[in-house]
Image (cartoon, rainbow, N blue to C red; front, side, top):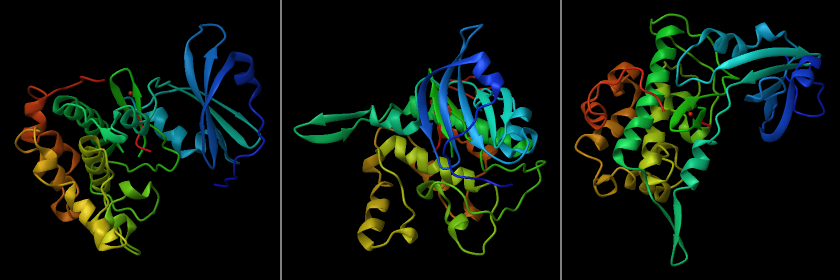
Length: 288
């Protein structure tokens, strides 16, 4: 599939006719996202334009989102095309990204910036929502957005269709580096869908500590490795309840020792914080 960098683009006539642009939301190497309003219904959506020489139905992101219906996965509304571009009208997540959410929890005290983590029940709810979406993806086939109190996975631009529930092996190297499992970064090595659990483990640690966890082996020096280890001390996890730290450690363990999504959803700490197993309870934010 041919891809070009973002430059001047032509939009499909239909999207210009049906939608009014409200504001720009973001841009990347291969596309841009804007908030738009349908001229008839006045409902607001996210318009994502991806540069591609392929037809809309051959875009992996379009294929995947058309087939996915889950409360914690961004929903696709309409798809249009113009020469060289694919225009997707997506569900709008109004509260921004995970990065924005975490920045909102930083307070100034005597000139210092202090991260104030969410409560353990809120962290558990966020983790449950994302694990639920990842489990759904793994059973049916890094990014995360917030809408109200609901976290949602978004941006499947590099996604591929896994297929069935059987164990799948992958080899492509794509992602945001701090969230990438060691086996993904290791040259020449294949990996499984458990790499997604590592990514959510890094997110779990970030929500608690306000810092990204880097695997000690990937740190450039001992000081960096020491900082990584300091994020996993009992002191940093006080007040999270029994089992929280071991759960986080298991999520970032070597692949063979790492839980899968279904096992993670059944962990006693998560179940206890949510007051028992939750099915279908949701609250929108993106892993990017």
